[in-house]
Amino acid sequence: MGTWYLDADLAESPMYKPPERIKHRLPLAVVPSSVAAATSRLFSPLVLKSGLRLNDRTWVPAMVPWRATAEGLVTNEVLDWYGRFAKGEPGAIVCEATGIRDVPSGPLLRIGHDRFMPGLERLVQRVREQSGGRTRLFIQLIDFLRLRRRPSSERFFRSFLVLRAEHRAILSEMTGDESWADPDRRSDSRVREQLAALSDEQHVEVLDARELEALRFGARERVHDEHLPHIRDLPQTLPSLFRAAASRAKAAGFDGVELHFAHAYTMSSFLSATNDRRDGYGGDRPGRVRLPLEVYRAVRAGVGSEYSVGCRFLCDEVIETGSHVADAMWFAQRFAEEGMDFLSLSTGGKFDDAKQPKVGEAAYPYTGKSGFECMPTAIADQRGPHGRNVAKQARVRRAIRQAGHTTPVVVCGGINRFDQAEGYLQAGVGDLIGAARQTLADPDWFKKLRLGRGAEQRRCVYSNYCEGLDQRHKQVTCQLWDRRQLSEPHIGLSADGKRRLTAPPWPERSSSG
Ligand SMILES: Cc1cc2nc3c(=O)[nH]c(=O)nc-3n(C[C@H](O)[C@H](O)[C@H](O)COP(=O)(O)O)c2cc1C
Ligand code: SF4
Image: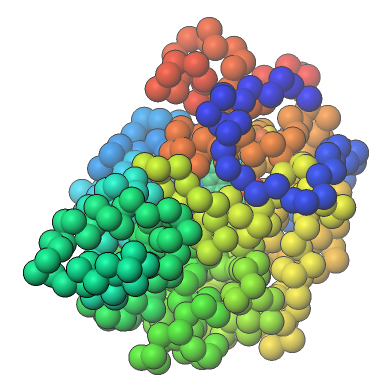
């Protein structure tokens, strides 16, 4: 295991720590010969309903690397990132969560306007070139609601809090001074100052739950904020936004799209059991799945039946009041009967249990228990990080099969060994093997396995160093290689010049002759 390079600020990342802290070693890996690999299910092809053929069942799920411009455009660093994955020739790569709106979203890729097309076309071309046309490329389409950074207490009370009569009433009760309730005697600005000076405990008494959240975490919109016109109108606006984005993806040459219905974002929030909208787009399961289905139908109408459209959603939100595996089984049946080409399963990753961010930072949906289940680390409970959610994912797939559908299912979470992946496929747990961090640690690992050179695999140690970078919107790299061969000519370096941005090349010819 290499040295762990944790910058001081990364080491301080507020991540969930399971109560039982067992440090799990990497399990022994069975390395197949090239003949065993060639006859395995992992390296057998799979044809989607659209007719698209994947050369094998290896799948790189979406990972945001924070390499786009501040305007959401493809950069050379984005091209290098995907080109490097493509060199490992996986069956499919899903390009990172890409914003469907034409609004500023920081250095996150965007596809909400035609000006993004030339960059996206170059991205498709790079993946084709680097994989020799072997790898299929999907793009993940995302919508998200507004999330503010956590404000200082002073700023919150001065600028953000919408002052209500109740605030004045509670203040006067608390202080025994009736003048606080009277706007003629105490100006709004005096009330704001007084509120800011209260203790944390007193803030609990004065503010309602959403105001308290806005103070402590930063204000976050919910899909059930129907009093806000842009939220109320989401069922009218989103289908056409997703449809336009998918049509651009098709025109740019992507092999398909993955609708992001997972984690902490808008569409996942519609599916969530916490969605209590009253307009027919929330409440029971048919209400919650309604908009995701309408989005899918709009996209399908835009791209036609011979284009691949799937979605990523959660087998379990892992929050108490959220959707669980029984909901996911039911949603999966609906998605399958609508004709989706694939269903990719993830777990957790919600804002609901995220840790409090520092002042000036935004809440990050992978810092609570649900985040841990999404990207489990080597320090975990008895169950460890490897495939800890595949039993739930298997139940979702079984429900799809029981309903008579053959829709392929992508399983994911702590998969980093051939025998493990092959075992899941043989046992019918899934149809495609997703490996995100393992492929970041070693973009060539699938190819190494295929060529019978699995002993050369660099294995992810599930430290979540990469995740800490993601959390701070820093260029994502892996601790196992980002300080290696820094003197190599023409390599891209991180903004601070300390880390290489893509994995060192694999000297493919050295031992194969
Ligand atoms: C740096 C980083 C960025 C990620 N970005 C996305 C994303 O854009 N969309 C998404 O659905 N999942 C994202 N994920 C989650 C992964 O796709 C995957 O579900 C998760 O890492 C668990 O799989 P693994 O154990 O194989 O890493 C990200 C993960 C990492 C480490
Ligand atoms: S990919 Fe991420 S979790 Fe895996 S070893 Fe590298 S930095 Fe650690």
